[in-house]
Length: 529
Ligand code: ADP
Ligand code: GLC
Image 1: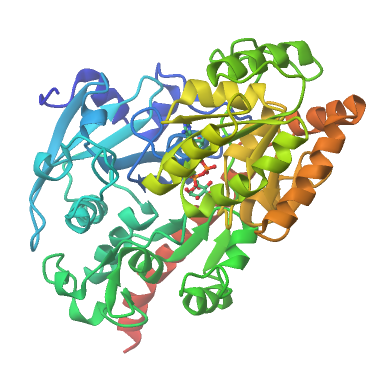
Image 2: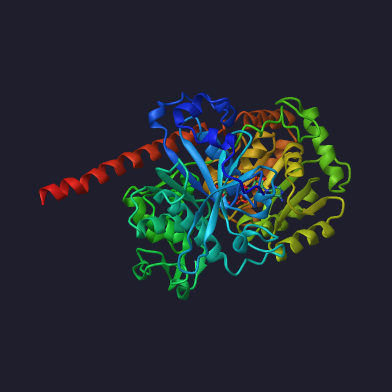
């Protein structure tokens, strides 16, 4: 890891926006979108605060979105990322330059801020604090799936660094005008900003309401949280502190990752105990759903991970990938339908339901391949399923992007019986690769799958409801004309980021405008009084 001052290259990235746009770095390389670039003056400086970013460190869809959304927004806004300096990031081969130091606060240690310039121009600021982040494991725990006991300190440090950045405490020419924080690990960013009276507006995006970052109220002083925050309109949740609720309570606006999930979380069935709080935010116009997109690498015609690239209607090319997948999972040769599961193995994703329908699938000539990692009992259940159906069900416990892509390309159907799904990316990836999702009619699945057109939806999280959708899918498989028409429809669906960046951009500009008005207002009031 380099610790020198900013390199000449990094200096170049610190140019004012007008020069950045005409610099030798090709801004289009950052964002393969054809939206018109708005006037330079309207480009907002946005700090995107996240705990993972695909390409460096990822455990699920948050990582994909953190890597793709700042790049997709680039033609419109100057979005830079702030994340912890995990070993996977510091050792990723991209030079890191320390640009500033930040003081500690309460039990949060001091840290350094590093700057890493990705080859495509994305700027990532790193919170460098070896005692908190330089550990073997995932962003959240050790390699055995146990959470780090000091996660509250680790992610409070991230949130405080974001607040410091917005306050101008980081010594660099770039200061965010807006902070966009993601999920509970970034939840304290809007909170520290509010408690310190900072005017910079913030947005908090919920990617998954079920992960709440709960901390005992005894940790309040350690984290430097004021006493008044322990209230129902603050970050208190059943006597504890919730980092997720902090983000929601103190941000100027809350978004979540699909329109349907935005509605669902205001109901007791999906609200994880926060439905009343969210309903009141929704009534005040402070909660919106903006669906994720997927990046341009999800194209079966160009994806170099695939064994054989293919276009819609080139089903022989798709079959080559299927052949590879069957061999990879030691399945018997078959001309029946191939079903894939590419998923974190957690209760949300409904593996138990897939286990419940596996016999139904195999009896009708289908085969199942599962790649995933997650809770130990779920991993064990997946292994047992493969043992129960040797040669017909194959399981890989692990995380492997290349094989995941080949599975989307080679399978006929993707199984996604999620109990809830804030957005879901796998079902979009699958459709792009001509694999029709069989999924529950919830959240982002409901918004991105057209039942009977690009996939199959079922209502209840039960084996019966799921099996009925599978029967429909298997019937379609037996009718090649219909199957191929559905595959073509699925592959042509427009899932790119265009649709997401317009509402995010509009929201950024609205909050910035409201902030300017409110900054002007107190002095006016002062004069009047
Ligand atoms: P979630 O974020 O809830 O896990 P998403 O569908 O939004 O669900 O995103 C999941 C992401 O993680 C996708 O990029 C998917 O391909 C990837 N993924 C999940 N499990 C694996 C795995 N075992 N190997 C490779 N990629 C995986
Ligand atoms: C979460 C959700 C998933 C969503 C992803 C990215 O992990 O479970 O539905 O697609 O975040 O927003």
